Image 1: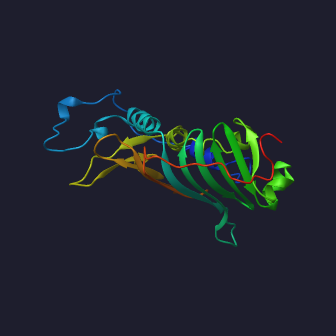
Image 2: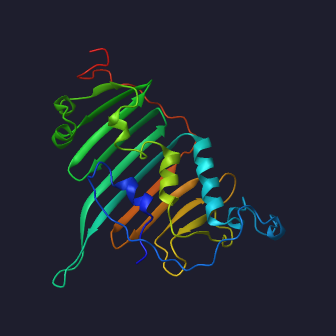
Length: 256
């Protein structure tokens, strides 16, 4: 059975909250061509764009991750809903859901995350992390104060590490692509503004990362699904400035 890339699912298996498993793929595609752009087949006048589709999947994925890292900041939202296995008597059913909203970049960002019964908000700025959440998150962390308001922590504590790579846009993009049994870039059609990196065997693709066709190939959207669940992310505002401010009245200050 062909499944989502293990690392893509690992992005969503945060602190064991959404424990899912992916089956190993069994792609039978021919080996990809050597990395790099085949300039002999590239006529930018005839097929305008950045030529990402002339690269093999691995090289194209690396270029997309480099573009995301160079851009630095982004606003993105995403979700994953697990699909519980059916039985001879019952149909598969939607289970727990992870949802994330993020704006900013590494070290300066705001994010809200829900995973199962956990809900939390993170503000990362000036080398400090502020977090607050619901009762389930307070019990999960062992920090009861987070239910009353923002709690400050200095540096990149476990409060951040637990949710990696959701708080690093380039790492997130890389995790959605790394480990796939097969990656291929579809040639653009007509004047479409985007191209797709198809994830999974060509005869049974399980998802796609949509990126810009012109300029740097920055991600626009990701969608994937198989027998374990369905996930989707949308990206916008790559490289835009994001205003991040520390909360004015944390219940636990960093100098407490």
